[in-house]
Image 1 (cartoon, rainbow, N blue to C red):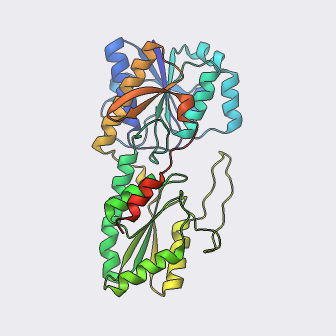
Image 2: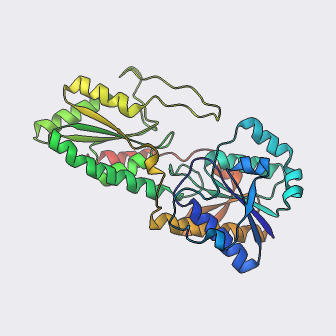
Amino acid sequence: MRIGVLTAGGDCPGLNAVIRSIVHRAVAQYGDEVIGFEDGYRGLLDSHFRSLDLDAVGGILARGGTILGSSRLERDRLREACENASDMIRDFGIDALIPIGGEGTLTAARMLSDAGLPVVGVPKTIDNDISSTDRTFGFDTAVTVATEAMDRLKTTAESHQRVMVVEVMGRHAGWIALESGMAAGAHGICLPERPFDPADLVKMVEERFARGKKFAVVCVAEGAHPAEGTMDYGKGEIDQYGHERFQGIGTALAYELEKRLGKEAKPVILGHVQRGGTPTAYDRVLATRFGWHAVEAAHRGEFGMMTALRGTDVVMVPLAEAVTELKTVPKGRMDETESVF
């Protein structure tokens, strides 16, 4: 069997662990040939690929990023790929394609599968917002990085009697903010799933200062937004990939709190530091398991499917099921978070 592999969308800790696992299982167990398309679907369209043998994936288990590179694909080019699916199968001689990526990548994978390509998807996103899987690799690393950052920021906030507003990733799902905020003991958490009122945060800070706790840390997801009419904050433009360009809620909220409280409030934007660097042990293990099961599914001919974690088991689910809707934070989890403040 000849297997093609690609990584698309934003980079994520654990991508290299998946690539390594796929190569080890396919080459060592089945004697397959594995090729890696460079820079995501762009490599598939432009015929940029290279052979992946055991030597090519040596020493990459703990490395962040992706050795194959990544990119986002414009919608017109995706349609081009679907129209030429049968030609790509013939030209590359591939028996299976394993795309590794998030919601956009898996949506493209479903389209290619519907067009006739033999596809087995592997879910990847630090946002943990892919339906049909309990966890995605990269999420644990992002939460760990954000938690450590807030642990460190607490000491400087206390030393200078400041309010620190920490913006973490999470466009439409607030899982990183939820779990890192809880783990770090943040005093306020703002999620995309529930509009917030700055007045509530002002009240929280004032009550803390009244009790002698003269600092506060607020964790806010990048996609969080204030309730209508509570503060000035507009929506951003839509980019060429269909994503909203956010206006910087961390900075806007810090300014609003400082204005209302008359106390120093500092924004800290963690940004891409959450998705770079060494993956945690949990993410390495999950990524390795996903790669192993993707190869097994390809050999069973289970195409149009995706690896997913259910409890402690890795199972195969239809790509169509996985990309129907995003997995957002449910009300019960938000209620749990509020109870600890």
